[in-house]
Length: 312
Ligand code: C2E
Ligand code: CA
Ligand code: CA
Image (tube, rainbow, N blue to C red; front, side, top):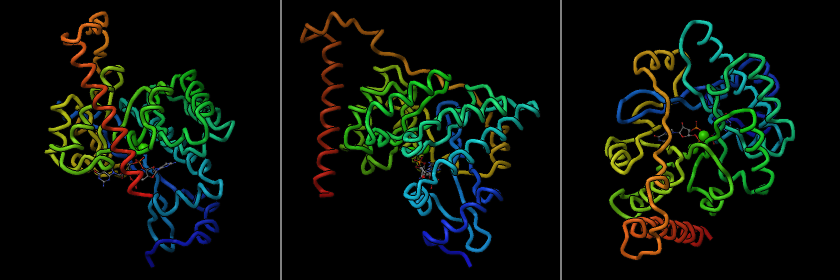
């Protein structure tokens, strides 16, 4: 019988699920929309229960988080990714970087980063082949805590991606305080008419990422129109159903061969191309760009504020 499991059923079967590999990984490619080649992938957790069938993260992750079990599931995912990358290396297949999600509850666990590092070393995977995604909501537990974890990840050499950028209520502050290496912008948070307000906000965020010299990936991209729009405003990296749903290891390997892959390149750091000394001049191009950028950011916080007010 296929159905969503209750909290108690999930908890009762968790140990077996970890032990017997019922918790497993699907891979969703990240694509350069300009070349059609892959630049990486995200590992997404699934739970297949022998009795109740496939369970989705939205149903079981909150239960695992609430019961302080998510770190074990996340470590199982991390190990699966290490195993997959080791398989590629052993078979002469050049790996693509795969990003692994880190729950905000993992950040509270003192030894979590050391644990993933132990796994990476055990499987002897070069650090460039595993990225870590943290969400901006991680900062809820305190900025010092999350910036400490970020520092530790950076010391080990991990590329850290900020997931779900724009979904929280203080996205710009989080970005200011956390020096992440990649920004992931979920189109679904800013959905609606891309020619309208949503489009203006997205475009301002892409500009901001360029100013910071931080590559940006648009996720949740479902249509060619969205992908083309993102490319036209300078965001060529895309993840979403348009290119591929999350797929099994086997299908993912086929996609790697089919599409080929290439490294992600850093966004052009506009700041280096701009003469900051010209900011005093109200008619200069630098001032014009700066005002557009700040204007976009203000609209953005205003919009989030409005959403917050609606929700209240
Ligand atoms: P996320 O990290 O933002 O992952 C992206 C989610 O968007 C995935 O859902 C993916 O299947 C879905 N998605 C991708 N492209 C599209 C699209 O074009 N349209 C739509 N409508 N959806 C798209 P999924 O796999 O159900 O995961 C949901 C969330 O569960 C993830 O959101 C993440 O927060 C969490 N999650 C998944 N795997 C893990 C994991 O290993 N560890 C932890 N801690 N959380 C995980
Ligand atoms: Ca993610
Ligand atoms: Ca996301």
